[in-house]
Every structure is written in structure tokens, then in C-alpha cells.
Length: 560
Image 1 (cartoon, rainbow, N blue to C red):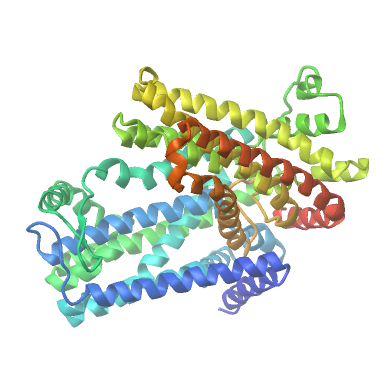
Image 2 (cartoon, rainbow, N blue to C red; image 1 turned 180 degrees about the horizontal axis):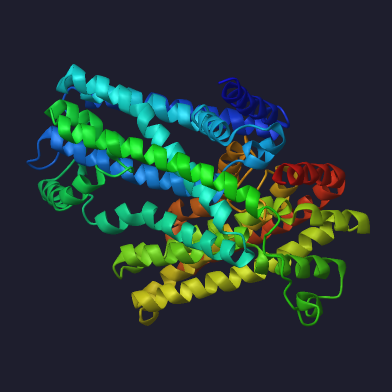
């Protein structure tokens, strides 16, 4: 027990040390704490108000409807957390197996300590508190159900943590080649987006209602019938899911309420078997990691010529552009995010059902996420940035070289997405749709250029850790806070800087303008922000080169 307690204390020591490492880490921690507090308070308030009179649509009993909702939401929550942990958070290399190799800790003790450290983390604690608060929603259904909900809360979080650790450990142990990592990373990202968008794609037409005089939402009779029919059609699916590790813990309180002790026992057996399986798989991964250490695929690819360096401008900024193109072609971490604009277009095409105005906003989302990676671009470059510092490269040359690549790529990408939207919605034959497209395309370009300008400044000031290119499923322990908060700050800044162009659409006399003029003004806004951001980013990089290099070196040490 002493080793396990030490590992839990080490987890928190690393978290606090990371928080105090820089001002940006402190800000990220504070923002994350506020979000967690808001989640806990919001769940508590909703559970208290929902408890006395749980109104459900259709003719389903309140208990059956609540069981349906909890099982379905629990399944989606488990899948999303496991996938998100595998893609973005990973197993935590600072609390990874290799860090404890010299201490002679038994495999069972080490695996138990890693699981305990996951359960002692902030996300797990917030999840347990929120699920425990949800027990208040069951108070009118009996004290036994409330007690069962309180007991099932830690069981659900333990299951999610162990499933996430098992998936991450298996990925790290089995997928060892660069090509395999790239393919698996992309596939997992596609699955994650599909899980997130399933409710919108299937239930787009079922959501409807009206606002009452007091501001609450009133569900219409037709919408209520649609929801009730959808719940009945999926009841068999949720019945099966409730006996799987994904949702068994969320169904336990309802077994107690209905006196289904046999089903309760079966679900407890399923959970116990899942924990044993995850623990056994973790032990196998520990042994496999030691046996296969150093046997990673090391074959070298044959490259003809000098690649992108042969057709980029013969200048310092051209060399930066060529190096960036080379990185983008072989980095699975960045390639995944470059697929996001296309995925947004596909999802909105499916949900739009041929309506142009419902599909065109995909251009705005594509522009917003187009340069998401570049907002932390130097972290993806890693220690390769040291070559620029040693060569005395000016910051403005670095920023211009990066802008050249991302600006050309993103504008062509947006144009192709716009063409796809016009073709598949049939808008290419309608003059009115062309006018609407001009506005949405203009704002898409504005978000793209503004995002690139913000990224060129932010990547010099707020560098946060990213997964190692060799292990894209793992991130240093305690750094997940920055990974979740800093991208939100980037998107907030982009929206604020595009806002002046958006407000022009609300100006009363804007109806006297040519419709396409709104898009042109948005593009001008983007060009101005991009020019200022490139210049300011170059100045900041000149002043902060050594500090940036020290930060990247520190991050590289943690990734080993």
C-alpha cells in the first residue's frame, strides 16, 4: 500500500508543479477549475429541480424514461471519454511504466498504483461528485435508489478509468510503426466524431418546441410523439447496452428501484469481470513493453531528391516552408486535425437534407478549425526549432514561411469544400444560393485568415505540450489541462476578432449593400489581422527565441 499511496501523491505533486511552472499553466488550471465547479453546481441544481416531478414525453413511465436516458447517455459518455483519452490525453508519460522501471515495483502493485492515480485525478473526482449529485434526481423514487446511485457513481468512474487505461496501453503496446500509428490515429478520430454527431444526425428533425411566456421550452405534441417513438424504437438497444461495461453501472439504481435483484447481480458480475480483464490486460502490456522495448520499426524510407526544398523559394522563409511541408506529410498528430474541416462539411451535408443555408455554415466552422494546429505549431516542431536558433533565423522569416504554407493550403481547401457544398446541395444552378455562398465563403476565409494571424502570435507565447510523434497516444502527466483550455482560448480570440465583420450584418443599412460586400469586408478583416499577426509574431519570436527553445527542450524531456 505504501507504493500505491506514494504514486497517488506523486500524481498530485506533478500536477501542482506543472501549475506553478508558468503563468499560462496557472491560468489553464484556474479556468479548468472554474469549468469543473460550474459542472458540479449545474448538475446539482438540475438534479434537484428534476427530482420532484420528472416530466417525460409520451406515455412512458418516468422510471423507464430515466433508465433509457441514463443508459444511453452513460454509454455515449464512456465511449467519448475513452476515445478522447486515447486520442488527446493518453496514458500520461510522466506516470508511465518506463518512469518506474528502476524502482523494482511488482507489476500488480504498479498497475494498481497507476489505476489509483487515475482515480485520484481531477477529472475522475469531478465525475464522481457530479454522478453522486445526480442521486438527488431519484429521491422521489425511494431511498434505496438514492443509496444505489451514490454507490454506483465511483463504480462508473472506475470502469471508465480502467477501460481508458486498457485501450491506451493496448494501443501503445501493439501499434509500434509510424504508418500504423497514423492510420489508427485517424480512424479513432473519425469514430470519436461519429459518436459525437450521432444524436444530431439521427435526431435532427425530432427536436422542436416553443418558448412559453416565462421563458421555458414547451415541447409540442408532434415533437413529443416523435421523441416517444424514438425512445420505444431504441429501448431494446438500451436494454442490451445496460448489460455491457459501457452502461452497467448507470443501470444499477433502477434495478434496486424495481427489485430486479437478479439483473443487479448480473450487472455487478459484468463490472467485476471488466475490472479483472482490464487489470489483466494492463499486466500483459507491462510485460510486453519490457520485452519489446527497443524493437520499434526502424527501417528508413528512400527519398528521391530534396523534396519540398526543391520547389520552395530559395530564401530563409522558403526553407521554413519546405521543412513545415515535410513535417505535415509525416506527422499523424497534425494530419488528423487537417481532416476536421472536411468532416464538418460531410456532417452538415448529411444533416442539412439538401438545404443550402443549413450546409453553408460548414465553411465558417472549417475556417475556425483550419489553423487549429498552428496555434501551437512550435510544439509540434519540437527540438527541430533549435536549428533555426543556431542559424540565426529572424522571427519574421519564420512567421512568413509558416504563413505561406498554411494560407495557400487553407484557401484551396476552403474553395474545394465550397465547391463540394454547392454541388451536393444543388445550389450551383441557383443565383440566390451563389449570393449566399459568397457571404459564407467570405466569412470562412475571414475565420481562416484571422485564425492564422492569431496562431502566429499565440504559438510564440502560449506553448503547451503535445503528444510525442513516436507515441501519439500519450501526453505528460498534468499537461491535459493546457491541452483542453488553450485551444478554447484560441477559438475565443478568433471569434472576437471576426466579430466586427459579423456585426455589419446586423447594421440596418446593410440591406442596401450588395450582398457579396459583406463577405468582402470579412475577407479584408482577415487579411488585416493576418498581416498584423505575422508581424507581431515575428517580433515576439525574436525576443523569446531562447525561452521558446528552453520550453521545447523541457517538453521533449517529458516525452521520453
